[in-house]
Image (cartoon, rainbow, N blue to C red):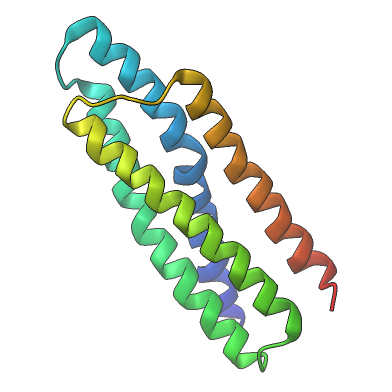
Length: 136
């Protein structure tokens, strides 16, 4: 079980990198596109980070569910799963932003993207609180 935890934590860290970095990278991509009018290196890097961390997110979710199963589904894991589902939905929305940006469509403001980025931080903090304190 310890190896599953190691894989889970490594993949969570990688997924979090993408969750925190990609919305911010879209801001820089948007600025680059406004200056050049074409797909540039920032867009390429943003797509690569998104794809890589998406795979890590899938592995993190699978190993997290595996651990919850091994522990017998304690009550706090249900709250954690709900929060992870919300974070995964947020990441799905981020993917939608990336797909539209790839077409040169940047409709969200820098302010929206910054706030959108911080929402994921709050979700991550909530997950950490549940995991560490196991409130029930």
